[in-house]
Picture 1 (cartoon, rainbow, N blue to C red):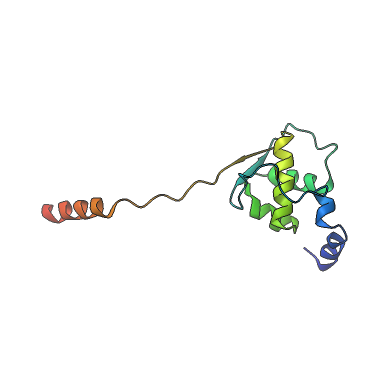
Picture 2 (cartoon, rainbow, N blue to C red):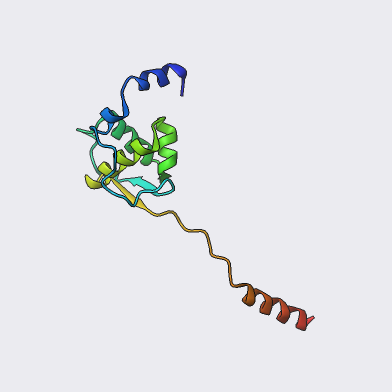
Length: 119
């Protein structure tokens, strides 16, 4: 993002972008929550920031943090915007795939012992 574009964005305060709200309507949004656009929904009537979210998410799943980074907006603002878009049916969200849990150490030891016994 160019410095001129950053200055231009700085002219609109965050509370204006979110219609004065500081908290999203959904508490389930995390910075790693993945969001996708519903491509059949029209963009008419959306604010420029919400249009930006939709355009980004039409290309595939992005995390809330990625959307914030691309738009140059604070994560708290992006959470409010995404929450509004989920409420209106423009976006759907899903939790990121959790990291695989490590197997039990005892189980690993038994497998290792079994492999050594075969050698």
